[in-house]
Amino acid sequence: MIEIPVELGARRYAVSIGHGVCGLLPEILSSFRGRRIVVVSNSRVWSLHGPRVEKPLRALGPLSRALVPDGERHKSRETLNALHDAFLDARLSRDGLVVAFGGGVVGDLAGFAAATYMRGLDWIVVPTTLLAMVDSAVGGKVGINHPRAKNLIGAFHQPGAVVADPALLATLPPRELRSGVYEVLKCGVLGDRALFKALQRAPQGLAGWERIDTENAIASACRIKAEVVEKDEREGGLRRVLNLGHTLGHALEAVTRYRRFTHGEAVGWGLVGAGWISRRRGLLSESAFDAVAGAVDHLGPRPRVSDLSPERILKAVGHDKKARGGRLTFVLPTGVGRVVVRDDVQPAEIERALEVMAAREALLG
Ligand code: NAD
Ligand code: GLY
Image (cartoon, rainbow, N blue to C red; front, side, top):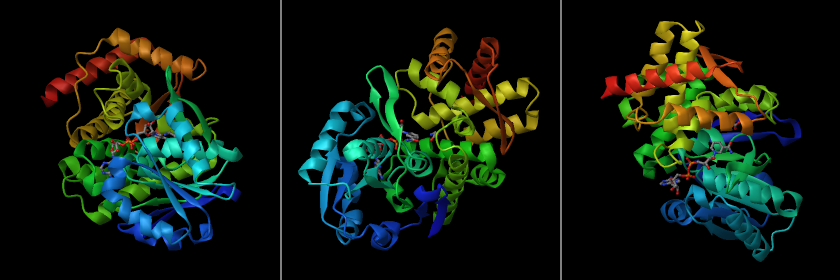
């Protein structure tokens, strides 16, 4: 088992990573023994993997289950209300424990329900998607969507532990797995050359990735995220570097109403776009740009971008800017493992990046 500490003083916790670690939940969570527990999941994850956690969690304390409907559109006030009802029905008091068992949707919902019930309950995360293992489970951002904006209502509420068992990923559809790998690649470009190289060497589409390689990749990505969160827990500045690839990625998701791309696929395109803007500014060498874009392509196919209107994408980038207090920040790679943050990227640069992305799509066929 690999342990990555997230050093946040009194709120420090560890990410425990390893095949089969779900079976070790009683040991890993021994400090929570005796607590009344509500495990939050959805019926898909629970029917596939519920038995892996139910018995180990029952060894810790009395257990109730709250299943939420599957899908991003259920990261809503209605589901939050239902979770608070379930906590009341289970007679959770301030010393209760919430366990999130699912992907990022379940984690964001369960964490926010825990943050807002009785002014904050302890919670732990057992992520079941790669994206949740390397991103959403770590760092304490929790929340729900507002009908008019994604992730608008939320809080920072750090979990007490994260337990990542890659054995759970065996049932994940390949596209969902790849979605997480783009976030891992982002971490490599952000600050870990060895991780980047490992992904360049990974089998194409990650078919048959060795156990140890998966565990090491998850651990490396979590280490990068932990280092950033330790320095800037509440996103005063530095934490924005985690948005590498996301400025264009969010815009691609928004103009296609979140239906065409998985989040990771949009981030993959966003990495190519940000890399190009950096290249054009002379911040990134041609060979480093080729390496970054080549690594994105190596992970597998992504839905097309060439038919999307650049005007609509620019408008969506503008909305992102408004949502972030009027500052459009672009994280630009300056090498593999290094980035800078810039707030002066011009629409013409974005348009050119979109052309380059479309040309790349044509090249890939
Ligand atoms: P998701 O939670 O919707 O899971 C994707 C699909 O996979 C779902 O249908 C789910 O039921 C299914 N699934 C989950 N585990 C499975 C398994 N082991 N086997 C088979 N199917 C499984 O999506 P996601 O990509 O995990 O998370 C996306 C969400 O995370 C978004 O809401 C996003 O806003 C949020 N997010 C939050 C943060 C943060 O810091 N809090 C960071 C990134 C993303
Ligand atoms: N996913 C970005 C962050 O946690 O800050």
